[in-house]
Length: 122
Image (cartoon, rainbow, N blue to C red):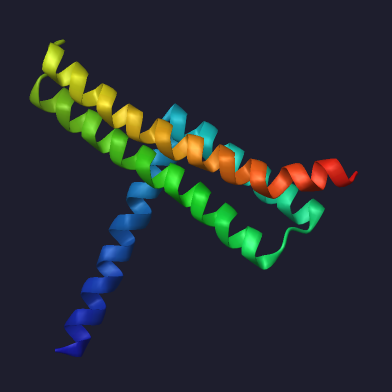
């Protein structure tokens, strides 16, 4: 029984990594946000942010990428169900984009809290 459980978890991980790769390969918004995440990681290394700051920065980057991935999935489902423009589909897509906006704003605030003191010190 445990062997089947482990095999299923490994299979699930493969699907998850495949999905992450598909997002990075095909979605411009994810590419930009992933690039910003890489840039902020490099900046964090350069200014030597603390372990606690790394936790918050990693959480913020993951939150934005995760919500953007869910937004993309929702948009793909909506387009599949109703390929032509429909006001209700547009409303649903706008709400999902709004969720990404909230996550991005939170990430900007976290970035400000982390990096403004470093900027002011130099």
